[in-house]
Amino acid sequence: MKYAIILLVALVFRQSQAHYLTGRLIFDNHWTDTWEYVRKISPYDGPLSDPNLALVYPNTDPASLDLRCGRNATKNWSTTKTAVLKAGDKVGFGAGAPTISLDKIARIYHPGFGSVWMSKSPHDDVDRYEGDGDWFKILQIVGRTEQSLDFEDPGNKNLYDRYKAMWGTFNVQSWNFTIPATTPPGKYLLRFEHVFPNTYDSQFYVNCAHIEVVNPGVVGTPSPLVKIPGIYERGQPDVYFDHYNSSFIEHPEDISWFIPPQPNVWKG
Ligand SMILES: *[C@@H]1O[C@H](CO)[C@@H](O)[C@H](O)[C@H]1NC(C)=O
Ligand SMILES: *[C@@H]1O[C@H](CO)[C@@H](O)[C@H](O)[C@H]1NC(C)=O
Ligand SMILES: *[C@@H]1O[C@H](CO)[C@@H](O)[C@H](O)[C@H]1NC(C)=O
Ligand SMILES: *[C@@H]1O[C@H](CO)[C@@H](O)[C@H](O)[C@H]1NC(C)=O
Ligand SMILES: [Cu+2]
Image 1: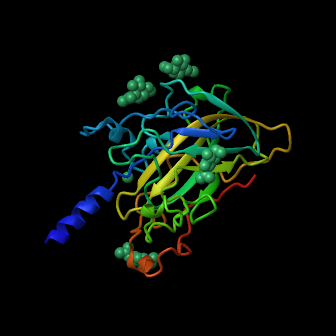
Image 2: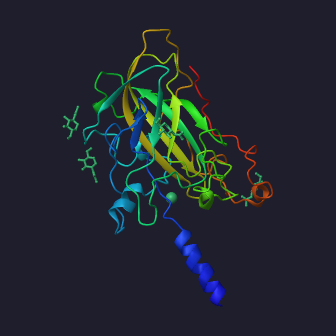
Image 3: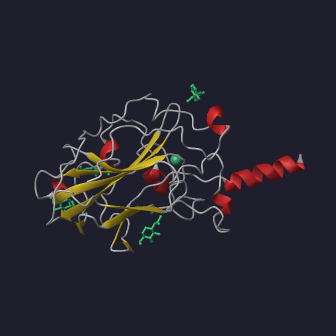
């Protein structure tokens, strides 16, 4: 009995709130502030007492406009700076802020797959661009890479979970990538997406940065092009599944069973 209580207390203390946002653009090896270069999102307007929890509260409707850039972020209602980048530059998104209650460091807390997308503004004013044009995917993150958390590091040991650690983004604080070298010049929304798969309500964590791509060199033709929303449908098996499915649990840390949803990545 005593043991059960101790175990329960330990579990409660280990349990994080586990929602997140990626509000910080990283470029020139520098983490910018939350909402400095990323479009501000609105808090979830349901009955939640903690305003930080309301802000990181996930979207679970793949048909919602909020799938594009986060809650209420298709229209310009804040001032967002535009980062000037060269095609081929390294850039990234950082988790946070804010953090909620027990989550002292902003991380991508859930298992699942990440991706990065771009959509060119049809005019020079990306502030006014609602993201209703074409999108293409430039990165898909599924399994572990050299950017994934090193769970051998004593400081990370308590974040390890053998049924989640096979996902490359699990518990990372940021993710870096390059703008494809042949990206056409122009103003873009740069969109980071992390999907936490579930059988019914998969969670979509999405944010968009404002960037201007400079490219005096060779220019390619991004494809395939898609609209957002429109990329996912409720129930599609590569977005809606039980990540604790017993067939996966037999081979924890093996992610080879997972083929990410379309579209394919444009490599530039
Ligand atoms: C991404 O780049 C930033 C800036 O150089 C760095 O602080 C961060 O650790 C990198 N993230 C990963 C996951 O390597
Ligand atoms: C949603 O965006 C509009 C501008 O499009 C803004 O006026 C409004 O305050 C935002 N709503 C919330 C709840 O922040
Ligand atoms: C975007 O919204 C901000 C804050 O309301 C405003 O200062 C800025 O002028 C707006 N920009 C455009 C292009 O509407
Ligand atoms: C578990 O995964 C297998 C293979 O992907 C699938 O056939 C089965 O329906 C899944 N079971 C549940 C409960 O999701
Ligand atoms: Cu969550």
